[in-house]
Length: 173
Image 1 (tube, rainbow, N blue to C red):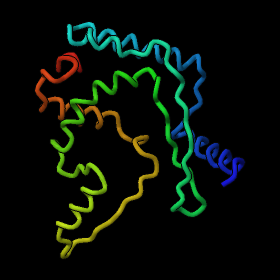
Image 2: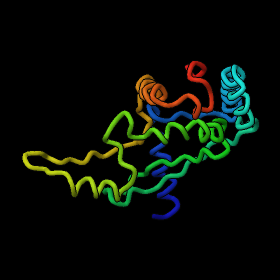
Image 3: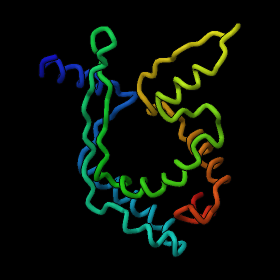
């Protein structure tokens, strides 16, 4: 794929206004200030939270996006990949994700860690009178309902020992 084709396909991907919207650097800075202000209010409620304040990014970088061609599809449509390193929530999200990551698979037995585990499950599953299907994901996470995501996170948090959480459970709501 040459550069002109890459640029055109990436612009076509970004032209989907139901998924993407243009945002100025000024708006990004405003959003970051609002995000940091809201997070500070939550974290300052407890000593444990106060220790997390250092993970806020005061001068965040604007997200960058690149397109990766889906070479297994006709016409090589693009898959968007965003680089959030240096973004406002990046460092803090890593800290907050640790206890959630350790709880993967606790609310659903369908979680698969990697392709090796998938192969192992497929080899030990009997498909008599069953149909196996594969669903293609168009754009990961962009259509995830915030309400359902928060509900799933709350289920996990309710089953985790509060001592391993970076903030108290009551302060996470």
